[in-house]
Image 1 (cartoon, helix red, strand yellow):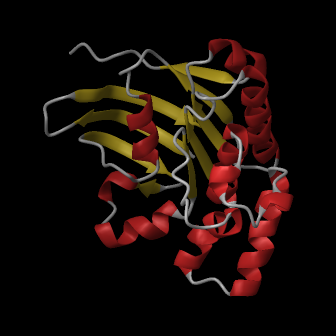
Image 2 (cartoon, rainbow, N blue to C red; image 1 turned 90 degrees about the horizontal axis):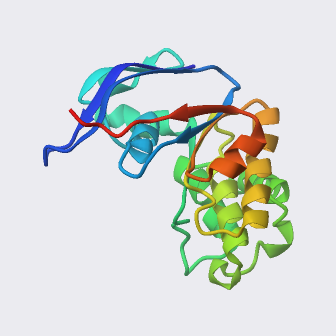
Image 3 (cartoon, rainbow, N blue to C red; image 1 turned 45 degrees about the horizontal axis):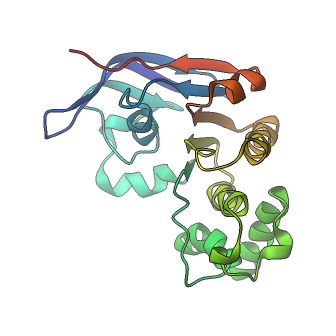
Length: 215
């Protein structure tokens, strides 16, 4: 499903974010990515999402060599991926519904299908009653769930989350993690980057530890 073969990532500044990473994530697996700050967790997720390209090595996602994708192929590839950031990147001038609908409108989906999918996604994260609200009026946990709904509204096969519980209290963080587990139970492959060791150990899933590059 997801396979890193001797992947390295070096930025133009000379910073080496990842070096010789070998990793396989099975279809339908849920795993956690951890490691010290600067170990490359965000970079690894961004490579899977097609937001960056590897400097060396081969990254295979469902038989697609991500490193060989042409620029015009990347938007279509990204439709397979749901990406959730710690900073929700919600649009303050649009309602919760419109924020979640944005990925579907970009694809040109009919408005009836958009409405159906957005309602289903909001229902999954228990926010259907908030669809008309401005996201800035929501709590931190609710904003994070809007971000999750937007990431899954396209029904992606892979869901990536970069420190999704970093600004939440323990109870809300646990709720968010169980939301991911629900999507995993429906067949999505999930990879979550987190530094909350207590929480991820409680989830009883595979833990992948990245070491900071010292090459």
